[in-house]
Amino acid sequence: MAALNDVPILATDIGNAYLNANPREKVYTTAGLEFGSELQGRSVLIVWALYGLKSSGAAWRAHLANTLHQLGYTSCLADPDVWFCPARKTDNFEYYEYVLVYVDDLLVLSHQGEKTMKALEEYYRLKDGFAPPTQYLGAEVKQWQFPQDITKTKWALSSIQDIKEAVKKIESFLKTQNRKLYPANQPMHTDYCPELDITPFLDDEMVNFYQSQISILRWMVELARLDIYIQVALLSSYLVQPRQGHLEAIYYIYGYLKTHDPSSIVFDDEYINWADEDFPSHDWSDFYKDVSEDIPLNAPQPRGMPIQINIFVNASHARNKVTRQSHTGILIYLNKAPIIWYS
Image (cartoon, rainbow, N blue to C red; front, top):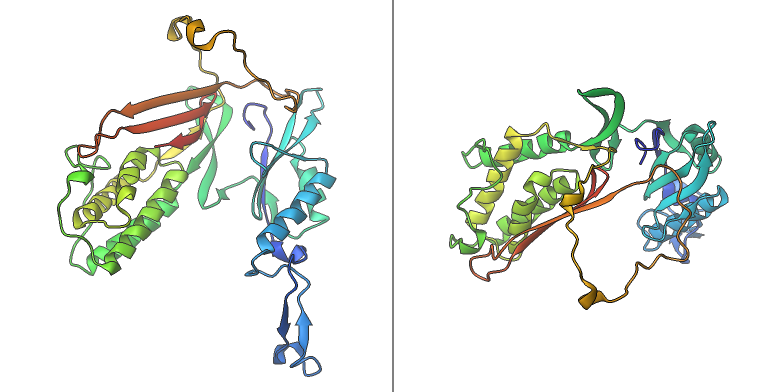
């Protein structure tokens, strides 16, 4: 959306975010020596939403929401942590400014992002100020240009550093077992079927290790490593009772990641030029009669450049050799930018 509407992105991190809000519960503690001799031993009422309290997350979210409302932003009905506000550039181009919130990490998409950030500084302490993003939620964020058109700048996401760190830890673990990580050219052997694996079950300690590695790999998928999604999804089916072969398959994925670590996903704002023959016309009136698309009455007025929503669906039919279940993959794009992937 930023590239499509030609607006910059600024990122910031709100310092000690929870402490800006009042707690939603009545909590007290007994003052220790660090409170001073006059207060030591007395009951002290907590008036800020301390980290660790059950309701502090909700209290902070409500506090920030109130601030954004005061600044003129509206919460999106589809995602309450996506905030938008009507804006107009100096050339009278109308679009929506966005503030994307993840707890205390904020991204601002606006031609006057500095103004928004300075308005937020009236309420909160912004750690290290604000700047174009280089990291967000553990992922590397960078600008990208295609060689065929260096005049247009896109945004890209990468998990290179997370992958390097995870691979390093796996190699250290394997070293304790006098083993090493071997390079791989694909995420999983083409003839390997996890459901047919009959190797011994892992003990409790290694089950915990297996589960932790699946969590790490699933986060890598969230950070744009779609190329390992189906393999991680298949191995996630054995979290309760994994076998040695399933763990070896995880090592194999890490071997692939080590060999293919400099991967990035580019959010391309260009449109797909669909041809008429890509969508042959069919008569479905026998099934759907005179139906029409329901447009929400409270939908915001369109602003900015129009977008395409492109969805690709495929399935590996009856892939599981035991249950004959299929495995489905779904990719949802805005123009040529993937925003949701599901396996």
